[in-house]
Length: 212
Image 1 (cartoon, rainbow, N blue to C red):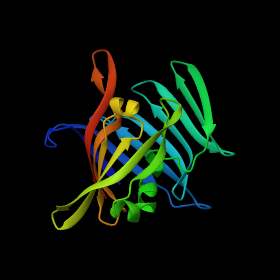
Image 2: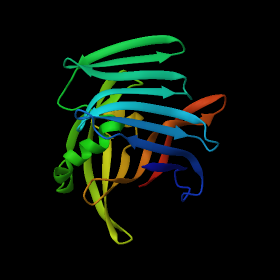
Image 3: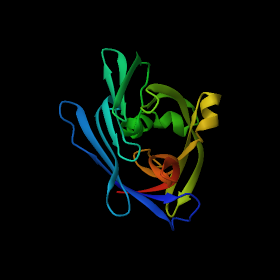
Image 4: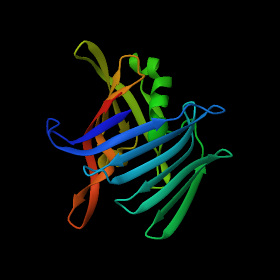
């Protein structure tokens, strides 16, 4: 599937980036996920490669050209292993694998696995792999509203940090899913690409529209 990223509150008039996600057919239960963000002239700004098994993450790697960082997150022997290379210096970290580990590549599968609970109003807690911080961060997701998008019912889901300190740094993300939870159709919030700021870049919150 593909997506287009727009400046927030621009009524989708100011396009910023394009997104493509390719999920390979499973081999021995594992699927490769390849995600690419490109700027308006087609230059790759963020590239992610992941291996997932069902709804579980096996390995994630990212090449973030804008911040000149490369990172991996890998699950091995009951641990989450982080590696981050920035300006030629590599730092690592590890922590014990908890009940859940979610990152962009397996987020949709995790949501679908918990969809019936979300749909009936339960709050689902999970650990999100923040590769920039080399640690997992607690988040929770819950349904906010059901609405109509033409003839189709769309269910809005909010994702926010469980920790109030992190909440001060990261605004909640607002997702829109198809009624059966199988497809993400929209997102408002923090995205992997960044926006130009002076000589460098800063974090970007955007509106994303998805196409299948």
